[in-house]
Length: 308
Picture 1 (cartoon, rainbow, N blue to C red):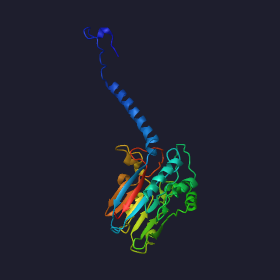
Picture 2 (cartoon, helix red, strand yellow; picture 1 turned 135 degrees about the vertical axis):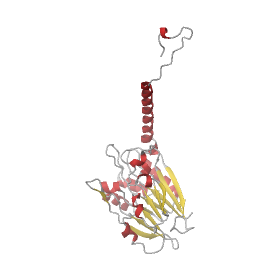
Picture 3 (cartoon, rainbow, N blue to C red; picture 1 turned 180 degrees about the vertical axis):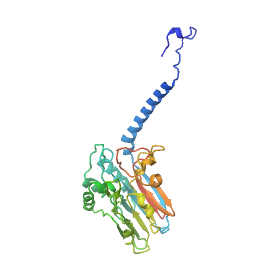
């Protein structure tokens, strides 16, 4: 903006620069923050949730036979439904998972999407289940249920999985694999199955009862939805696989860890957790919860190689 001639020296006639005041600085800063927030929100809501990555881990944890290679595809928190996990996106997930050609596929629950304050387009149970059934693996595809499955329609989710012959492990363990390379696959019931009026939950998990079913010295893989139970998982389990946290889902610096759906905050939020020689891998999952947005944590399929 050019100042009146009386306030500008005759020789230069250049426009004087506006004086930087605290009000101007705050106004400019608020505008920049607004633009940044709008851009971030657009990315978090419309771009990142539609991405798909494959995150790979290779390890030989204690309790697993060295040289006994097993590949695992982990699909967690599908949350089937629009706007971000449409049938088209689910098909992309299935095709990517199929291309991994793992020995076994495990589904860690939360198959349905649900948002309290956002409209979403549901994907019917037979459709998402039918897509997941297209993934082929020599040792099969196995599932557990998550908290959203329990909160909305556990019978419908079970029926959809049963219709496509995907067994659900609920406080159960089964011995699978070829002779000489067998292992126990165990899955527990959800830890947040029944919301109570005081803000707490009653679970249907029975870890001791599940582990009592293990009758040989073969390695144990444990499927859980919420990772918090890891504090009670014994050394007998070679590897625990978990979901639920979405890796934080919206990982804004400094504050994201306070919103992780876990009593332990960021401790079990994401990735390969090792405590006291015990190993757990927490998937960032695929869909979204509460709000249909992701930031700093794109949807992922986890691929684990044991005994590599």
